[in-house]
Length: 177
Image 1 (spheres, one colour):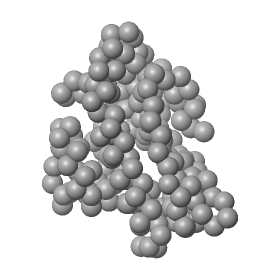
Image 2: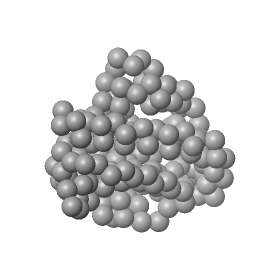
Image 3: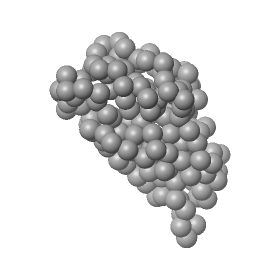
């Protein structure tokens, strides 16, 4: 899996999944095209974090997310999409660094952390299991301590966002729209 190639060792993680009554092709298309701003939970929590998506009328697809900091590190069609980010997530501005598929693995600056976030799909018996996993690697002890405190507060809300994203993707894939 791409997530294992880009961040095999990590300090923090979270995983969520759902089963969808749709083909892998429909689910994969829904992952990429679902507008997450349709959920007041998602845009509200992201607005609280200060990521700028405070208006529910603004689209928020994976493409929009990659235009606002996350890099699309890789894709295995109909199997996995991987996003990545590097910064000081525990600070107000986040101190986001410019990373991409070419430099993400090598980024190793003290005081920062790297994160990967994937969507992976597995189809069996006409149903697709959609999983999302987030992994964070802190690049020194100071960043690990800072992130641990931040994660204690943020992790439940991150989980709500991921679960809500899976719900919206499921709704779209099952409706066939």
